[in-house]
Length: 293
Image (cartoon, rainbow, N blue to C red; front, side):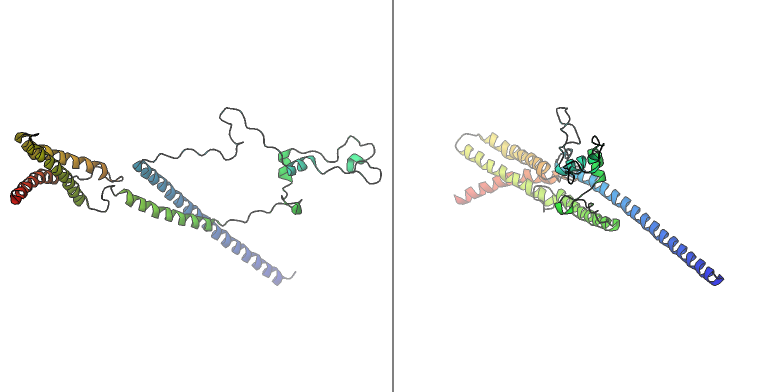
């Protein structure tokens, strides 16, 4: 070998070494990026799990129970007895016992080592345990593929799997935000503002109290209720019942599930509405009766 050929070979080897170092650096950088993406995705999924637990507790959903093992042989039964061992299939029994013994040619004796003279006590093939036979002879199930090794699964690209997991995490975040928005709305008049909801609730309770006031007025007209009792109910009793009724309704159906603390119930406004609505309704009733007369 001449010096020029030796120098060219050295340059080629050095170039291959540098290319290998570059490939190793690129692979190392890719692995670091994959590990960082896995860690970030793990943190996202952990935060999503905690948030879903909070949503479940807020709406009163119990935690899911533990999933039982899929295979009956992985855990003992409830009575404490071990489950029965799985039965061998036809392929396993064939793998354990070896090939079928066929009569030898000509004399009808056993073929193979068992058919050799003076070796009658020797089996054709040594028997293997079932587990070793399965590991040593992975064959296909179909008759056409007997003796052919099982096809290995295709290699999975970690980057593609991480991208799919990231998209699923984004979709879970979107649905979680929608659930939080729905959980921040109360059951009663969810699209209304808190002030408008409080006004509507107190006004509705005052209207119910006004109906009861009309019933008391009619009862007073026939002599069942005296004037003092009627005035007490109109000025204090029915407005107080309407106010406390609106207060309880706002506390029960006007509170969102995911709001920290107590939402405003506008107590002064409710007190004013209830204690003015019933007497005003009574005055309007009197004016209407006198106008009709």
